[in-house]
Image (tube, rainbow, N blue to C red):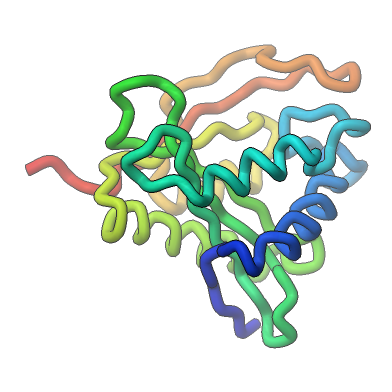
Length: 183
């Protein structure tokens, strides 16, 4: 499948928000499982989260709370997946960021996750000069964990029973990848 990856700017944001809301509607569904720590009835992109995401995209990398996001688009300009990087909330972590990503249900298992991940890691290293990219993934999301491991992420922690959602107990896996080697 031919795709291209582009940064989310103000002009693309409304379409991205609509895509993400649709994407989140799969969270916890039969056959998909949980990929976000949200109950089924709260698996949507709320107005509060939309506003916070939009503001964070406009922040400079030197400011706390920055965020950058990209989407993959097919030949018909349909959003097929997304990836985002954001500042960590803790002080003294400016050399790291947190990754989030997803692929639209109709385009999974086509290599999009790998392409989006590669794009974000290159940007983190080459454009932002970040040293580490971290992520958090629900332990039951085996496909995502395998993708991250193939991309060089290493499990750095596991928080058992981190979430109790819709009657299920879910563990949280922490993973990291160094993108700039020490001198």
